[in-house]
Amino acid sequence: MLAMLKPVMPVFDYVINQDYIAEYLCINKDKPEMDCNGKCYLMEMLEEENQQKKQNLPAIDLREYPIGFVQVLHIPSVTQLSFKTKNNTIYTRQYSSLFNDSLFHPPIGC
Image 1 (cartoon, one colour):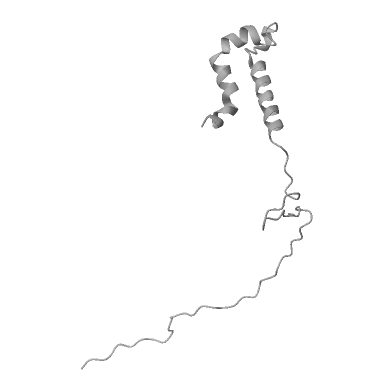
Image 2: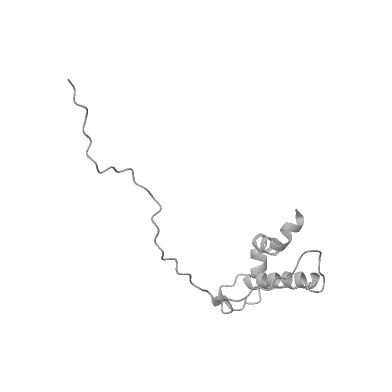
């Protein structure tokens, strides 16, 4: 559960301590027209979090570590695909009608 909250911890820290960050840790506090309010510090902390994440995760190339039946698929780009149209214009009558064109004459009574 704690691992799921780790990526958003800098944001929580910023929201909770926004006044302190804006007053003491903000890089742009001498430029009030930027209306930074410590967002520069938040961006710096998020960038640091991303850098730590990249350093902790080694790059894995699946071609170097084949696993059983798993294969790296090559999917051709759209420019390599060729689309052929098929001409299916043969009309076939595949239905029958119950229409009877003879006249029905009711039986003549005595």
